[in-house]
Image (cartoon, rainbow, N blue to C red; front, side, top):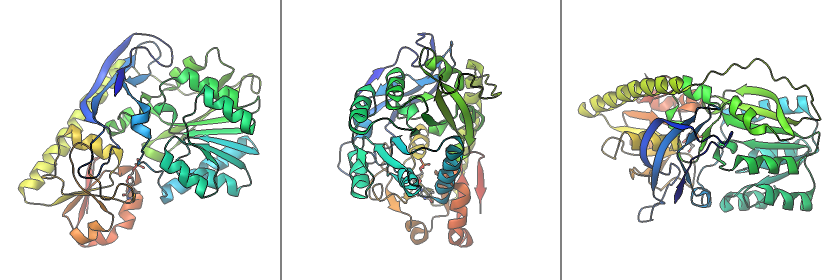
Length: 399
Ligand code: TMP
């Protein structure tokens, strides 16, 4: 189901030091119906590269197991729509693309956005259910993984692209060198590449340990990206921060010939083994506080639910060994998740209406990255005496 990861995927060093351990966990998006067999369990441990500072998981779960039947769909929330318009505006400032390739295009929402702006679009999406949906909706999408081999086929069939976007895909990829070769092949000297990733500095600062799961093989820092791009025709052109998903950056890459004197600004990174041990101490404090709060509410006889069956929820639940005794159910807006069970704990996933039907005393906001939007949407729950437990980025109770 997985293989051990021994050398840094950015710089090739074998000096990888364990810095954070979440134990053995189920796959965080392995939502199954009752009676269906689960995909299995794998260690969730972070190794730190003492040469380029890249944090990376100690194992690589087989991608066909993780992605062939994928329940994660990009949110259609207002926050995500705002993000797409901000991203598109920043891209149009840089470039006037006629063609766009999106790698990991998921439900095709971003491609549809660019299609409406008159750009010719093509998506690559390994999840068959998602690729089929896009093609049916008129968004041309290939159902395979992106690598040098598929890049060659795409170029033969469709030519090269002016703009390449990969949102939250890069950190899911094991073989970065091959991925970057594919990027080089698919573009030309004027191509703008936009690689959106969660930023490890935000993860460390905001204690986002729940974004560490098997799909996220790496926790990217710019120093590691620079190492990776050595000896390739690409270089970092610009880095743009966005608030989406608890803090992300878009690393814009350009061909060295396009921008021979690229200077992407004064980004200072000092990510060390100590940053990770400090993170571990602060996470342990947070988890202890969260756990004792749940314990105390349970002893008071309060009924607790979860809000948002995010992959993050699976990490919290399994690390704390929570069961149906602590969390009665979790609500979620994703049709494919409703009626399934939370991986590892079998807590049932109900549709979002369940919150007002079941009226739990507390709902743990596992989709904490949409906090503002959720609080605005669930005014009736709060008005009826319900309370939200928000675990991150600051542990608090609303209501
Ligand atoms: P994400 O943080 O990885 O996008 O996952 C968020 C999950 O939370 C996803 O399964 C959808 C769900 N969700 C809700 O159930 N209600 C909401 O209002 C929002 C914004 C998300």
